[in-house]
Image (cartoon, rainbow over all chains, first blue to last red; front, side):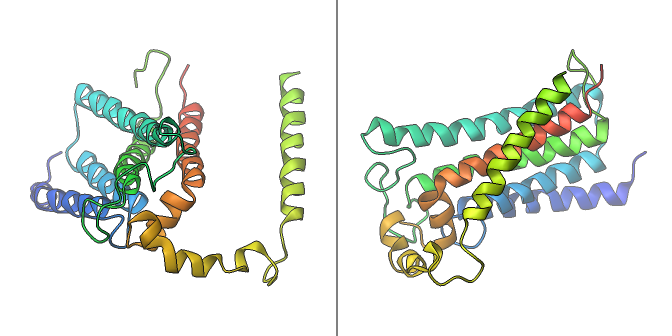
Length: 146
Length: 89
């Protein structure tokens, strides 16, 4: 079923929601917000998209894999950033002395905080979207089919 | 048999967690480590220590980054649990 009003409003709103989510994510070390809230806003836009535009199975599957990639990639990035500290002779997840801190208040500052915020935001978005899809479709079988 | 073993393991984890909670200082105790000036240190030094002007981001992703890694693991466990519940044979 196509609902024209819903689709037009979704086309207007989804880029705005995603832009705002990325703003919250990339300014996590400067303004209120950060990885958890920014990731949730981006996931909300993805959920909105998949509710309004019903997908064919093939496209759905691809989207599911992408969200799983973000899910694993965010956690991996976090651990790799932590291991960089050990590589330079400090403890796990050291910021000061390992990453350039920059001038406080600028976008490129605060070293690993900005990196982890973006990675963890992708992970949060992937988690919430995966939870939504699992609950919507009722899970997968052994071959990964729905 | 598997159920009994998992019950024993879960009971052991429960005892450990309850012991950890019993060790915690009472609510509102002014000798607790959380009230020994750490708040003033965070507010005064976080910008110099981390380069972030958002103190909350400085705390959760620098001073307590290890804790937030555990939080990310909680999200992962949530997805695994939902996938396991909705698993189709």
